[in-house]
Length: 293
Image 1: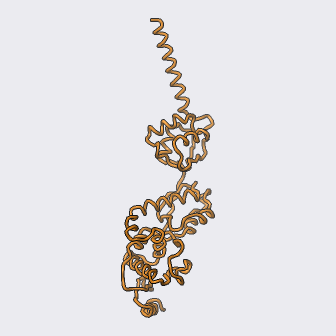
Image 2: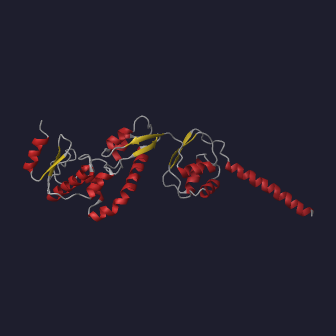
Image 3: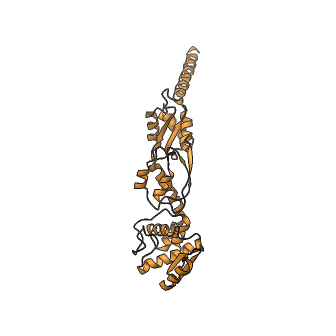
């Protein structure tokens, strides 16, 4: 009886020790970097992420952090980015935030219109974004593949993180129309280059598709596309080497689905309407009629 009671006492104190030990691991480290931004790199596995957070004094125990992440269902769904921790937080709260992408950082609304170039997009990131390297963005951002949209960007955005967000958005938007691109027999790169030329030429889908048909026809005939002087399509045949801007989905669809017409020339008159012609003589007459003073 006495031995049984001793065992119970030992188990009781062992249980208390386990609870205290676990609790100590579930509390933030004493040197938690409160008031700091913690970077969660892209592509980190849960094991590596937990060890990285331990090194940064964000958590005490990688094991308990991983346990929390798995419990929350986020083992494969941890969001990369920069997280602001105003005060120390438990590993469960930290795992919950990283799973949800709750960055705790002020965001700014950025609207990128259809047809904006990389340079124009870069200009949207002004002094509100102190970590954004405009020069790097203009040098490395992939023209044509940054999807025009409204974004809520954290003020800690960098050139690299912004490129990834906009490029990922492009992939999401283009994915549903990939079967149509494949059915067209054209390469994605050619479709985007053509869409960038169509962008800004017209203001409605019917005209976009007619202009698309004219430009594809000129391309087939070896004619200069005569769309944009800076893109060298005005005097030289063929598509530009790369897109000249970042087109929206409407222009991309027009590039995929051109309307076949007998026309070879077009212009936008002072009346704001598109005027088409079959021959160069007809085109000159339209210039005189719709563009002259």
